[in-house]
Image: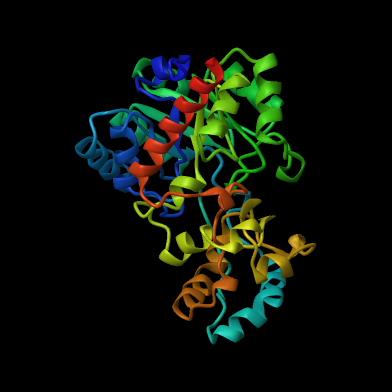
Length: 361
């Protein structure tokens, strides 16, 4: 059967289908548990959470499912070496965004913004609570962390946007590698070269990695139905990760308007932008994303840009100025059909099975 891959044995699941772990408070226990209970791997993006919140999350997941699930963190969660923005950086971004704050009738942040990495404290909770699967993006954890995961029987999954990154992950000894194509929604998790130069498509990247790397590979980006899964498996993928299609389901924590837009005509238009967070990510085209093209040098580094935009986002949502809000989305959104996670999961399995049955005839 098509689902009898290396991945299902390694992950301890029935189907080689992973739900993308959404950060930024878009994941829910209900969504992740639904996918896990139906034979896939539910995921939860925890990079914005405190250690205590991650501990509670893991407890909730254990209550919601007795099947494997995935908690995701960011190895590199800041691009601010000094820890805070300079006055010059703050003035540049204020000048750039002042018209939007004035239009919404709110004040801009005045004090220099700052941020300290939380990854080391967060990963300590992972090692203590021992979730079945620990995935990570934007880098490779230390050899010590990966060795502790192995001793604790925690399956490790790292994300790569280039062949070089996949080789680095394999050298570190991760259990599985996500081939993250540029079609995918959300942040580009590049860590060896600038994201703007790490934009290989999913199926090309998958083939490059499979040709040079022996570690099992998960294809991610542009996959939302059985045909996509079948194509990925035919090209050597051991599993797939589905993001946007699950984000559009009512069990996610996406705003209702966000989910509606993923099923609208607007879903045809996605862009890669740094305007909202300071790191390159794919979402639906917006007034701000278009206005910020070519002005990236005036943006704050991640995550200070996110902090700077926080009050603007809140005000735009309150005033329903959707053109000022970033709605994450992959390029596959125009093909979405399902609004319930269980329906989507069933369709993914049934469609893939039907496709392979047809190929036998």
